[in-house]
Length: 236
Image 1 (cartoon, rainbow, N blue to C red):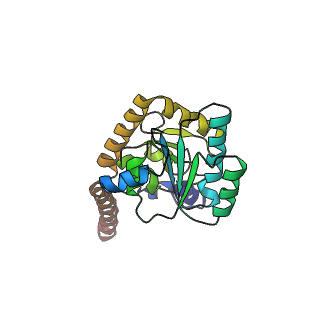
Image 2 (tube, rainbow, N blue to C red; image 1 turned 180 degrees about the horizontal axis):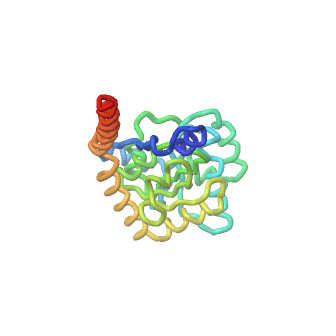
Image 3 (tube, rainbow, N blue to C red; image 1 turned 45 degrees about the vertical axis):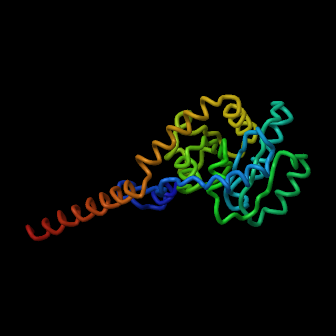
């Protein structure tokens, strides 16, 4: 999305290369931390995790509305969601959770400096964003081997393929997100397949080593082009 914005502003498209973020191999949290966290939520209930700054562009309000639709219209009761983060939308989201009667289905966990236990516990990671660049949460979830339901914004569809390494829906559409979440809740096999393929992709294409190789390749291409220019100037 940033590349296209630069192109619209006049930068030649063939001079723009998109370099996505990288993610380190995931180290699961220790068993004691995971057990302590899991005991905070209803037992034998699938856990949905949403990690990010609580701000308008991250779309957590849409997620709460999706969870309300999931429970009220789709009659899905077996889930618990955890919103991890802090930000300017904190009070508004707390009020919306109360207005929708989701107190028993949604926990506001606040800022957490160590999110590894949340990825380790999660059955599904949800990203309801309105905009993204190259999202670390998506890469972290894939590296952790967790199925993802995300909005099709920014760099998300450049990293994850719908139905292959994640389920992608249009942004600002709570009903579509609710149906994607329900699909993952009701199909453990699909969750496992998306998680497996997402983890393989993160390890193969978005590792720090792959990032360095890609960046080095860009530098080499630029330098080679510069050498051609210099050689042409000498010939003249």
